[in-house]
Structure formats: structure tokens, C-alpha cells
Length: 66
Image (cartoon, rainbow, N blue to C red; front, side, top):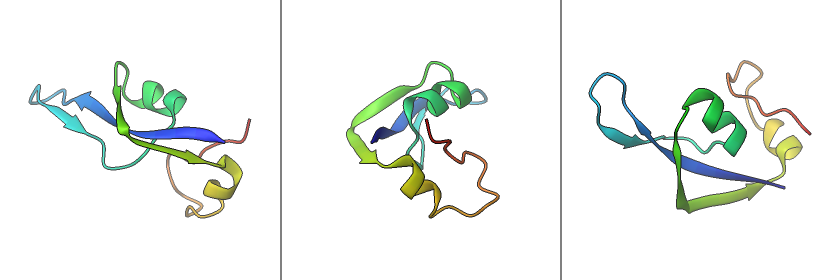
């Protein structure tokens, strides 16, 4: 099981703080949005392999099993 959150990030253009629209695990969030902060109330636990099977093949942040 892996933890997934929505993340608070700072928009590089406007400088405004905003929340991601999708849930990401910690590794992916830090890779895509360095310095992002998790929204703890949005925490979900998912089985990465099961979750990956529900995504389209061209999904850009496809999780990789450990």
C-alpha cells in the first residue's frame, strides 16, 4: 500500500499557492513539484499495481511498482 495525497504547490507564474487536482505519492510529488506540501486531509492508501491498471496507457505519472 502506498500513501497518496493532493499537494499544495506554489504556481511559478503567479506565486499563488494552489492544490493539485490529482493525488500523487510522495516520491512523484517531490519529483514533479519540488517543495510541495501534502494536504493531510486528502490522504488515501492505494495498491500501486491495482491503481496502475485503472490508468490509461499514456498517463504521464504512471506509478511503478516497488
